[in-house]
Length: 141
Image 1 (cartoon, rainbow, N blue to C red):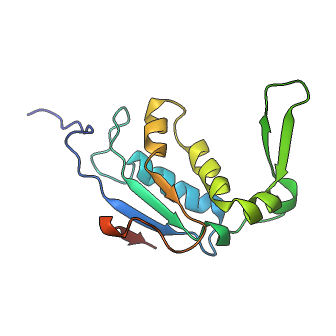
Image 2: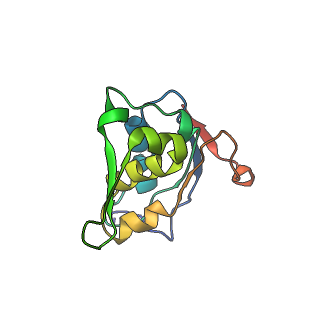
Image 3: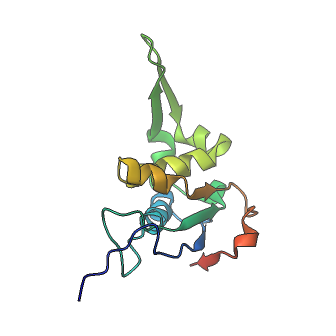
């Protein structure tokens, strides 16, 4: 008898919907990252891509606990001297809440080709309408 090893060819991928309304941004990102990676499945294999699709709705209604809205910054660099750009999370959540959620989930995925492939299966929407109704996604609590 041999041990079963999951891979991309022998698993069935499902779609899940996570509602972020009223939930902390980090807790929602953890749920999404675990499903994208496939860690909720009994046949999870660390070196194989066995994750599923995730749709996050109401990203604009996710909350940040404590004083993170004022104290937390998204920083990126243009590559030029003095090119550091900073955006306060209060501004980021007001203007681009999808990006804030994507950054949180991306940071929780492995930083290799498996994580990059898993990140392509994430769909984030600021409102409660999404375009993947035809896939019949399962709603998570």
